[in-house]
Length: 94
Image (cartoon, rainbow, N blue to C red; front, side, top):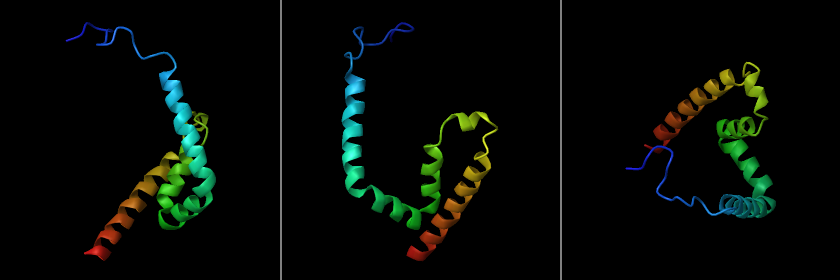
């Protein structure tokens, strides 16, 4: 439909629109985190430990991934652990 490297909007995204959305999102997230952050983190740690660890891994600097990614084995273990927990949870609700 469109020629290569051309989009349906020749003017492109309005200048600063993506940046503005990021600012709004971060401001709203920051406000919510200031009010609920610590309690949410604690709740996730207690009720969803694998998700808690995945979030911790996600905020680590990206350069750690370039150094043989020591967390890849842990991530696989967390995925298996999460799968087991979900299966147990499904059985409890049946």
